[in-house]
Image 1 (cartoon, rainbow, N blue to C red):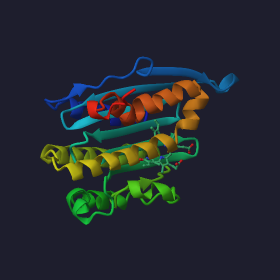
Image 2 (image 1 turned 90 degrees about the vertical axis):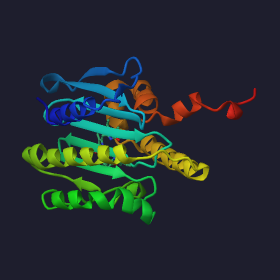
Image 3 (image 1 turned 180 degrees about the horizontal axis):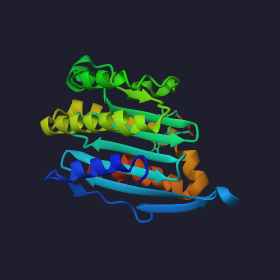
Image 4 (image 1 turned 30 degrees about the vertical axis):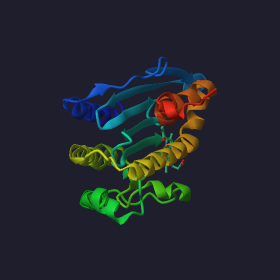
Length: 256
Ligand code: DBV
């Protein structure tokens, strides 16, 4: 059993209990991808598997699980709400590299500086955040340009020990996911056109940043090549723009 398998199993179990859950299509070739990397006695299989679901409120719930031995494990788990809800994104980036663990867990806001938004989606989770912060201290260095995409309840930590991941990080992951699904249950569709427009802009801002700056791009390119990697990023991991293109209202279709 690899380090993040219990996280993935838990998420899938919780999601599958929901009556409105449906599979979300994973493009052919991306359900599972494997490569042998390294030389001689350092050869290792790196296996990347993908999982995806949807509900009437959540456009895409998806996970990428990378398993490449004790010093290469990743679970990247993101939930993208439909564009007619003001829900934040659920963002989990659980990464183990030779240098140690790197954990990012948050409900990433659409409107970080909007106080009404913070009161709705950040304040309720601050008590959870604070209860873990003592065991999971701030992880330090962090890209400044990523700041707008994280909430004040951003759990960002670099634990040294596996057992911190297995205990505190796992517990935090479960609590954040449950709190997120509770937000979903309460969310009401947005109908005001101006509000809808600003949600779409915020979703695109977030998506473009993540696709462009995906910290896994280098790793995936080394293992599986750049063609597979770019298609995985834009066609599965961060696929909103492609889907918007496919669903253009007829009035916006190019008239050529
Ligand atoms: N990160 C992803 C996806 C991954 C992934 C889809 C499937 O967004 C893995 C894999 N994250 C991953 C790996 C690393 C990181 C690092 C492999 C290590 C990169 C390396 O050191 O070579 C949060 N993830 C990081 C870092 C941060 C995050 C801050 C370290 C700094 C960095 O390398 O950029 N999550 C990440 C992030 C956002 C987010 C930047 C921005 C909105 O939501």
